[in-house]
Structure formats: C-alpha cells, structure tokens
Length: 277
Image (cartoon, rainbow, N blue to C red):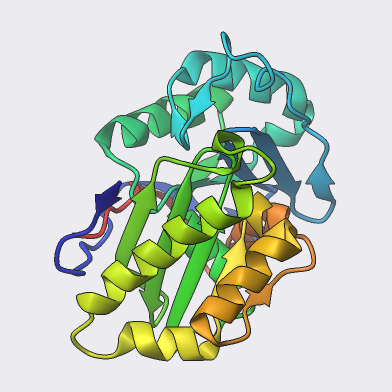
C-alpha cells in the first residue's frame, strides 16, 4: 500500500500547448474528442457525440500480453496497438483525454506520454480517475468529496477539496485477488482501512465532511450490492453509486473534455499526471 504524506498537492506542469481549437476564418468549432480509461481488466473509450465504444477485453484476457497491470501501463507499445485496432478512425485528429490512477508514478507518466504519442491525436489531456469519477457523480466543485474506486487489481480512496486531490491512498489489491466468498469482506476491509488512515491525518475535518456527504463509489466493486451495503453500514452514511459505476470514470473524463472543448478560445495542453504529496 502506498500513501500520500501530508496531503499537499503539487500543481500540474504544462509542457506544451497544442494550439487553439478553431478553424481560421470560421470561428470556434468543436474538435473531435475521445476519452480513454485503461483498466487492469480491460479498456473503455467514450467518443464525444457518440458514446461508449465497444473496445472489449482484447489483449487484456491473456496474462502474457496484458499491457496494464495493477492500474499501471507496463507495455505502452502493445497497449497502443490494441487501442489502434479497437478505436480505428475514432482516434484520428481527436483530442484525447486519458485517465490515470490518483497515485500514478513517474514510470506510468512516461508510459502515458509514449502511448498518447503513438495514437497521434491533435491534442491530449491527462487527468486523474478520482476527478473524473466525481465529475460523473455530479459532485459540486466546492466542498470535500471522497471517491472510492474498486477495480480488478487496484483499490483507491481519494479526497478532493474544491475539485483538487489533497490526499489519497492506494492498495495493490482488487476484485480479482479474492474468491467469491471472501471478496466482500476483504475489499471492504481495505477500503475502510484507507479511509481510517486518512481520517487520522485529517487536520481540518475535510474527510469527516466528505464522509457525511456520502462517498462516491466507482469501479467494478461498486456493482456488488454486498460491498456497497457493507461500506454504507460501516460508515453509517448513504453512499453514492452511479447507475453504471464500471464506466463512471470514462464518462466523467468525457464530460470534463467536452466542457473544455466548448469553452471560448479553448486550447489543449499536455498536463502530466500529478501525484499528491
């Protein structure tokens, strides 16, 4: 398990500007947009104006060639080939937003740059999955929000205040690590342990406020009523679960991208993933 230290967040470094999304002499026009969520059990993509693209688990179902493990890109070249076959023309001249785990490290950031470059987009944005999930849940920008992401091989808890991640915890375990009988109790134990750790280090009551508002649950674990019920009962508060939590991150990323592209004079810059400190 890895954890942030003091809850402070470093601002994103903008490395290069891709230019304005306008056509000369024709005024602003919407650019093609594509959101991608790479998971340990598969990938999901959302095309603006069209919806979910059926990528399927191609390449993720064989351990020997699976390019994403524990939420981290381990083979950017293979991942790019798989996405190229799955997305086809959808990716051409698109602005692509790629979500990443909250505590993504330098190796993942480097792999993300390599992957995005191979796809040849017109512009790229990289954002954390907790912010995308909160956007999908309709959480307001003001006030604390607690996002619990329970995936196949990774479990994360992130605290957002005014839309920014200020604290996070991560466990390299997920749904695929437990059998059917122990899954619920084991996943919930990890989630509650991370929330308790954040609560102990909370100096300003943000965690308590976020819990009272109701945590946002996402990922495959949020599809299991036994898991969500245990978390709600243990915390003593209702939890917020999207109608399709498995796609909440990619849909939230698409919402953020769509809002950015609709903004007057919008431009897209490459922003490296940020790790809370």
